[in-house]
Length: 326
Ligand code: PEP
Ligand code: MG
Image 1: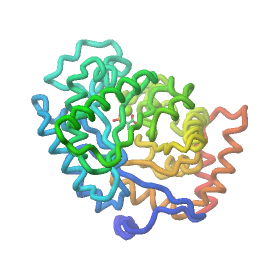
Image 2 (image 1 turned 120 degrees about the vertical axis):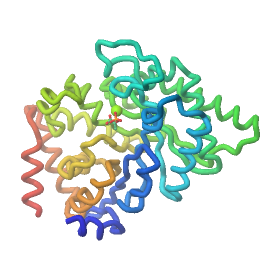
Image 3 (image 1 turned 180 degrees about the vertical axis):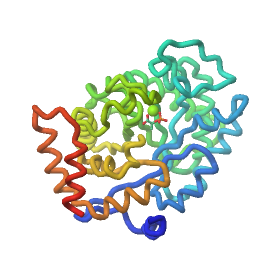
């Protein structure tokens, strides 16, 4: 099987009926980079910048951040890289950063909430990213966006750093795209203005699932109680994909479900044309989609999701579809 996946590395990721699907990989450290070639990923759809901070015993200096980002961009060559700004707090604590005690850390002082209150930290990181991407293409996305004002605040920090770099004679990135992670359900009810503000959106389904069902993603007693292939959750994901289509804004998904072939199949049926996953999942997901009739799945899945009385899981339908089309 491993052999078969390896042989698929250079095969274009296209469904049987011709839909091209962008398969990207998630990464976070230098050691992940060789996987870019080995897996056949089209790019890095999620670079988790907090990992460099989590493995360090003191705050990484600006120069160390810039060096890492430059190494990633160089290793990727022509392939696109999406850097996510610091997503700390919650379950990702930094020993050298004071995190006060919290009753509900997942709902607490984390990601952009913390970064916008401590702009020194975020500005240092943005400056390192923009310098590393000098003259190159780069995508930057913000985690845990909850309110649209946070996007404006982040954008003004970027603009400020761009002006700063210009003043000091640094060449800016050749192409800079800004995106947000959609992982808090509040955004589901403001999709039109959200799409209007961004170049791309990436769904963080791990957190979106956690907040959608109010279920701790790390607590084994409850985390498996609800299904990420349940009809209500799939409806939410589809709303985002369709809104992106309407606005011409690329929508991707980078949570763990993207790497499970059955879930990845569901995502393609919902209209996703780009997903990002752990590198070892790319082979199995590609093997699945080469056999898939995406149009047919889309129609059958729509019939299920559009039935207002349907509230259970789509898992058995999806398994059955996969069986029928073997
Ligand atoms: C997610 O929430 O789905 C995600 C990709 O981010 P992380 O797992 O790092 O929270
Ligand atoms: Mg997340």
